[in-house]
Length: 327
Image (cartoon, rainbow, N blue to C red; front, side, top):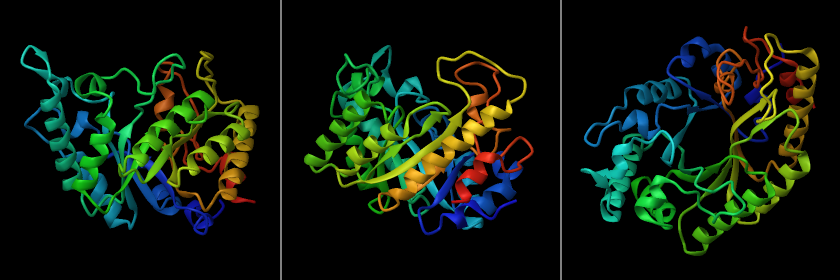
């Protein structure tokens, strides 16, 4: 087994992993040996911490925060404002839709309470997640409950509230398909409009849910350079390399060796590019730790196995691991 992943990249950028309140026990050895930071996979999302209007539940998030402190790991907060995994009560008032003023009040109270609870423990937050539309024919912002309740300025308010709630935390806009030319321009336009109006956005989170075929390195490069031109910091926030294209419904009982080879090549070329832009990136986080615990084994094909990470089901390093630690 090669040396520590995060130690290998110490002079480049921090290396993190998404965890949950179970994996911090089942995958503890891998976490403490190979990663310098962690992100809660789900446990700080509104669905979990704020299930009803007058109830906050920080138990699972606190377990992860305690683990980070006990093992000298940085903690990245994820996520405050999102159209998904947010309870419906945020957008309702009695039998009808919530008013703009009440939606803003609820947003502010949620951000203040959650960020306040973890203030001094989280170094950064994904303040707004996946607000940009994938559809080239639609405006910049996707049709979503926060947009319907508040209006086009809901992203602005989220970042303002977040800065007030924790002035020391780095504030990120986070999104997927971030290398697609149409969507990357939309993300750029959104963040630029915020910066131009003095809204406190510290960085862009490029999720990095990629696969062994795409996106091509040149597309990643163009997106990196586009976002970097805004003068913000960049992070890869949810990196995994699927064995399947998104629209591929093929399934395998066992991963084929040629796919592992392709995956290793992809990881190798991606990290070569990231090392080239080391001055732009303040972190790279994998969305998971090992192949035995990945969201991609259930998405987008229910029940299909996938093998997107650096460590296999037995927590042994794969060829993909070798491809990024030997350079």
